[in-house]
Image (tube, rainbow, N blue to C red; front, top):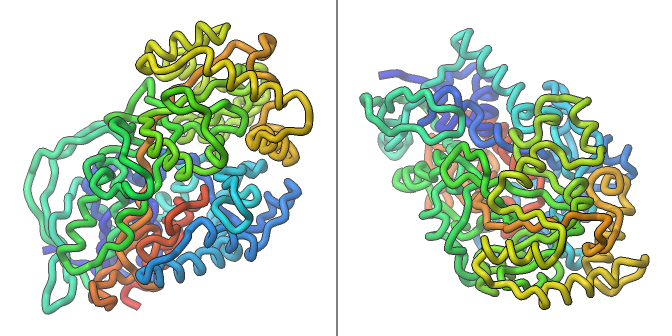
Length: 547
């Protein structure tokens, strides 16, 4: 039987950080993963690479004044911690904020990471000062996107593997955490047959054999439940967000299945905040899918007209890019299984970004010439591809033609006169610098920020102005993504049992631990904090294991 000091279950970002940190301390480390080597890095590979920094040089160059106090106000206003079991999530949130305002950027910069100079302003809130959302832009897109975040850790892990300090065991699916005298002492499971599928594609579950490894400590870093809609629906907070939509698209590959959560529970670990989750409302079906039911999230600027499936405009704070779960709740209360953006070519050219490394070849490939084309007269290539091939996109010259086609694909629920009245009312508000319309006010406010004016917010204009056309409609689906609750851990990343005591030999990091503590985000999240949570919790686990 193979024997190691530390076994890491899951070869995503959190697992790689934990494994390399533990190996640097001189421990023998084995990383096991149910997928093949082509999936090294897990979900992080597909991300836009956004990171949450506080008072960064990039912010200061963009004339953004940020502080730890303001970030703490935003975080805790969003989190809304209100449960006795939120003790450790709260402690993790405090520690993460200190990290984000302190050594996080320096640590990553030293490893070779760099960031796009224009800081993004995602998840803006749209309510009161002490409520949800980022008060200032904090979304730092990594040069190289998700692969760029992974690169230094993949390189370090592969170098350690070549020197024998770290071992990879791919296609090893864990079925059990082994226990001896109350201590976790190893893992066992099945070896899956090799499968040459491309990264992200669903792989076979053909059995080839079984395995059993022993270790002094186990770090579980297996990710969340976003690829398992059965689990998502089972944990859905109906009382808070309404009933889950009949149809959702998946923002993560099928292997993000939550298997290890139940396996860790069987070994004595406790899961808290199971009902806290993060799903986007701006999902579209991928015209070139990689995994089953593959959805892509639109990162919108603030200008699109947004209505429910019946054509009723959404109220503030349900505005594009402002309050994700607030919008999800509103749609749930209305029984709206999908929603619509109506916009112009001028808006889509400047305001539409698609989440994911594969949808941003300029940033992912570090291609400056291609990046500069975003400032041109046409939408970026990936956006144009969706306009031409995406089943959720409609492009027409007139509102009558547009609504007719929207009804053709959305179930004949929209009334042209109702839609026209609402858009005309919005258009009357846009023609001067004053307005009582919350969204129009938000548009003017966004353009006060240099980054938004340059790249993310179109010049205010009437949607029905023919000069700005053609008109575009986008059908939006709920897109499953992140698990905000998870394995209950203390500040040493030790998994706690039902009595609040550490399970000997058991640690957890990343999304499976709610990115730390069992839910350091609380009920809501501030964009740019998911990858950061993997980095931070993986680092803690790797540095504290066997400590």
